[in-house]
Amino acid sequence: MAKENSLDILSSSDQTQKVEGKKLHFNLIRNYPQKNAEILSSQYGFNIFLAGLLLMFAWAVHAVGITDRDLLSYLITLMLIQLVWMLWYIFGSYTQRRTIIEKDTDAGARWLRCGITLFAVITLILDSFKIGYYIGYSECLSITEGIFPVTHTIHTLLQVYFLWFHAKDIIQSFKTLERFGLIHAVFTNLLLWANGILTESKHQLNEHKERLITLGFSNITMDHHTPECNCTSNVCSIFSQGIYYLYPFTIEYHILASTMLYVLWKNIGRHVKHQQQQKIHFKFHGITAGTILGLIVLTTTIAVLVVYLIQIERSKSKSELALCFIMFYLFAITVLTLMCTAGIIGLIIYRLENKSLDETESPAKKLDSDLLVGSACGSWLISWGSILAIICAETRPEYSWYNLPYSILVIVEKYIQNLFIIECIHRKEEELIDGRTLEKIFSVSSRSTLSLTPSYEVFNESVTICNKEFPYLSNSELSLGEASAEDKKSQENNNSIRLSPSAIAIQVARSEKLNKKRRVLKNIAAFLFLCNISLWIPPAFGCRPQYDNGLEEVVFGFEPWITVVNLAMPFSIFYRMHSASSLFEVYCKT
Image (cartoon, rainbow, N blue to C red):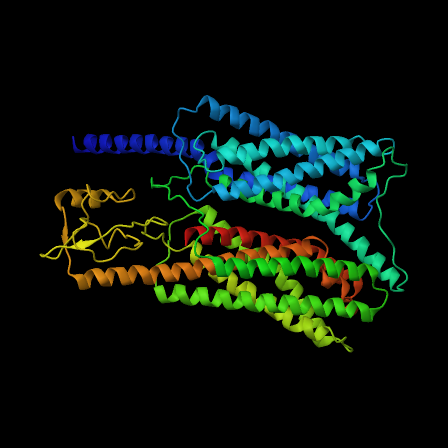
């Protein structure tokens, strides 16, 4: 009997293990695509991206058998695939519109969608110029050069619609398919961004070579991709010149779209705690000093840009060029010094508050921080190259000594600004009712009971109310829209609170002190926002002394230094625009 019982126990345990093993095997098979979809889709995205980069490189160096027709055909195919996927997703979302979809409150802010819409509108103007240019040279241009801007126009319109209404979605169905669709969209936009950079960089390089030829340099070959026929319209020259002035905006559009799509991709299958979305309000109040200083910097930047470009075109000697460089470096040194000072003041205020950081996992916040540091590496690379060139050069022009503090300040300013932005983005939200003030006549009764009756006037001014400071005000006397459930319950049980006049004065003093800090931080954010817009304009529109001063080219060689600048400059330009958008968020949250 004992043997039979032991055999029964062993057989039953074997059967249990087999059943559990089958269940485990089934679960592994069922969950396998979901666990590996992120890795598989990212590898797919990298492969289509690398293939596109190689096509661009082959076209740029005039590889045998590779033409612009091949590159444009590849980009058109990628855009058409993304269009099909976006239509499928939008239609699926419309059929399931009654289903509750989780949202990421940190992703796709309204101001961010407004910004991408503005860039998209300018991109559509660029596409219309390309269509007009193709019509003028249709006799000798391939049909792909006409199809590309038309496809890109449709792609831009649908993508902006998709980002406006679905940027906050947290996808929970068809997760494997959606991962591949989104990563395809991310890398399609990155390739369009890289294509815009390549075209714009070749144009800037040709202009630089033309200036070198004017100054007497020889053995310089131009790389023109001009049509071999005459234009059938009188406006072709306007189209060809206008296209290059619009490229900086379409470049920013595609990199911004790729970041928003990447956040959407990272959010697939994510579960977030249900929390009330804190609306960010933009109010132009109390930022006069920061705005005025920022506008002065912006106006001066435009003036310096115009003078620089005119003088560079007209200069026929190095002495004339030196005046342009000295003017630019003095202006940039002044602006960067002011920005460093403002950033340090902001960091000191944050340190004095000694407030804890928000450690909640957020793909949008993490991406913002990574992009700030990653894109800053472009400027750091160019700056360190300039510093080494100044140190190692055998002979140094006079203006190179202005380039040295400029390069050092570029490194330091980005370091300080990154700390300031990341510090604010990752801080916990204020419990203040932001922007809401109550202009009431608070009074104290004979029993030192705080009420809202106008019997004995204590003060009559705008006071910001904090949930923790005044949690028990009567619900019938004061309605707080943002109050918590516990606060409302306490309000029902307490019609008034007993506070001495000294306690009231302490609370008011704390509120006023906090308001002063917030006002200073808002001014700093507004000033840095306008300064970053100002520093984005010169390199985006052709003011690049790294090309023109010649010292780095002598030390490193013409081709190596031009390659470094062409690779690093797009990241430097993107850094300024991304910093501006982050600082706008800092301003609204402060």
